[in-house]
Length: 328
Ligand code: F6P
Image 1 (cartoon, rainbow, N blue to C red):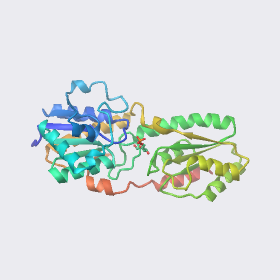
Image 2 (cartoon, helix red, strand yellow):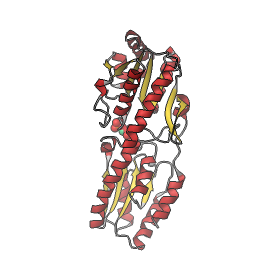
Image 3 (cartoon, rainbow, N blue to C red):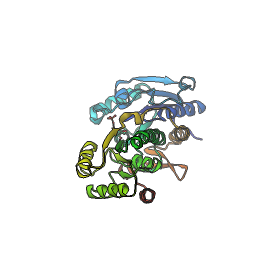
Image 4 (spheres, helix red, strand yellow):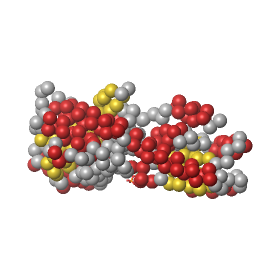
């Protein structure tokens, strides 16, 4: 394999997700395998601007494949959005003699990488890391599978208390602009209704559905609500609305929050991170840049960063139908 790289930088940026450490390990070890030096960049673009670097060897990424969060830490940088900030970052990378970058993050991270490449011609490769699974060009982002398992386990527990008290629970899950988590855990945990940003069910249909389930003999119910749901009300207002219109229900709300981003990555996420790390480094070695490594039909595939940023990850409509049938 022709190699264009002597030293590769790796960083994590944006919201952390389980599997980021496994990706750092994979990038570092692929570099070591090909006799390329590897440098960890702390706190995403913030650390890049400040030159907050650490040399990484195959041995000092031991024992992290199973750890949640990111050993390199993560941040969202305002300064990198300015030309001055990006120039500082470029100078810091040059001073450290870094030839190419692997960036693990979401669309904000990729947008920064693309601008950086356009301005300085710096080779960049992206690995999608976010629990939201809202990136075009991959069926799975790093951390998504782990988050699904975490959330399903929690909803199972909520169901225990919901059914003991004959209550209706609104469970809010993460997903600022996308309903992938909500839809999948909704089906996996047997939710009565699933509210996602991509489909506006409407308040009346929600009431109708809850009335139907009450009439069919159900004494407790779980409604999964994606954080970014556009039904027009936040989850607490939804509770008030349903309580006002259906006095027979006692309603509770559980906002799961950041616990969904933590925890040890699933086997799926560890394997995915390892595959993506290898591909990202070997692509840079071949002179490939401005691409995101994704998983499509269980094969590692590259998508131009520009497409990954602009394209929309699509919700699985089949699952909506499955959910409707399951709640009969
Ligand atoms: O990483 C994506 C995400 O988890 C979204 O689902 C959520 O809206 C957001 O991050 C919260 O980010 P933070 O609280 O870290 O700013």
